[in-house]
Image (cartoon, rainbow, N blue to C red):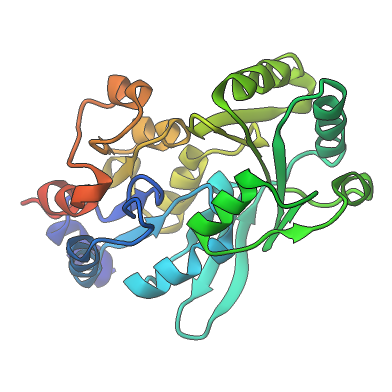
Length: 283
């Protein structure tokens, strides 16, 4: 109990969920030095700084190690939350919400039948699976530092593979068309959001970074009013609007800036450090 009392006294927001791409890291995929220092100062004061990303677990490990984070990782937009020990390099599942088993193969067939030029990528636990290498998943591999397994998707999905998230990448007009296709199938129980104009992140409708925020606040025994969230994309909006304080990056999408009035510098200028110093660790 003493630790909890110390955290609440010293920090205005003792739990912070932060997006990664477009938020924590710069365009080169690196965490600015001032952000590393701010996160370490926040953690040293007793704060829990949690990475919350559409990325799969293996694409978050190096960042968690760099920041020395011994807290859960919210991966795949919240469909898979894992406990990761950066010192032992060990994993265990904290919570998971996969898609309904029949849905991924149905979506695959719809994409094929509509002849949509989409790069469909499936995430199952620690695995990232794609039909083939293409410009889109090569780009994603460069961003995340991980590589997809190249396997026949139709065959794997037909066996009832547990799928936590599907990432579809394409030019923006194609993404618009795919989003409309998903909206026409409410029976699939899916939610879809753009983490960037060319990325459509698809998961079970019960999944969001908002649900992850609730789960972790409950786990740490904190009210939502004691939480802060930082992000830049549409998939960040659920946690930004639900947290005690939502902070939009200076480079956030217009749809995000329109909903979240509190903002800081861009990811290139270390806006996360500004958010921690000015709000989370404010007197």
